[in-house]
Image 1 (tube, rainbow, N blue to C red):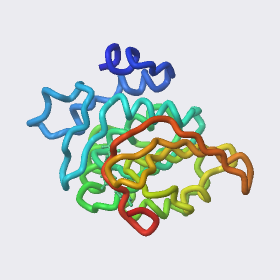
Image 2 (image 1 turned 90 degrees about the horizontal axis):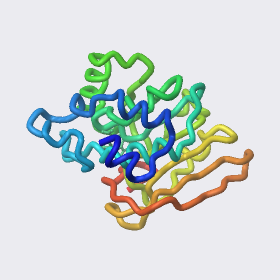
Image 3 (image 1 turned 135 degrees about the vertical axis):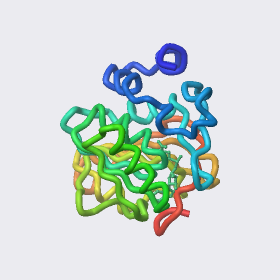
Image 4 (image 1 turned 30 degrees about the horizontal axis):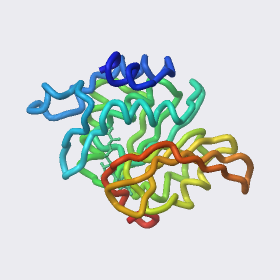
Length: 204
Ligand code: SAM
């Protein structure tokens, strides 16, 4: 997975590669799918949701331009895999999941695996998690119809938001927003992606 799907496709950030090497993807999927754990595909998890393909997890993590002292907000906990990868690079990961059963199984799994710097919250992540804002980086792992205002506002100055955005709920453009100053944001398009929809007050 590391050689072929990450290095082979241009992932270069050493911290990201180290984190992807350390986190056992097989611990985040159903045992009937174990043989596919290190193939570069999204896989089904409970509630009709997915764990993203390894390359996309690495690509989005790299696009966040993380430092070891960063505090990161993830929207869309799912299995907890991407949160685990982020937690190997930064100080604290706050992650929000709208589906209660996924939030509690991810929390349990992450506890069991010994990840102590991840806080899982059940709620509508389109509204962010204001209590712990501002964040140095925010990553959204579901497709939004537009960039939620709440998430922009919860970025620190200098912070980066990486989010799939698109008019179709299953096909989006991955976008990076940088907060340059209080009212100054810069947006760049990164690549086309396909995510399950972000459902909520500022989503679908
Ligand atoms: N990051 C996850 C992982 O590593 O397994 C994969 C996330 S999956 C592609 C997208 C997740 O976003 C789903 O679990 C879905 O329930 C969640 N989601 C959708 N809308 C949401 C919202 N408004 N707030 C929080 N989570 C949301």
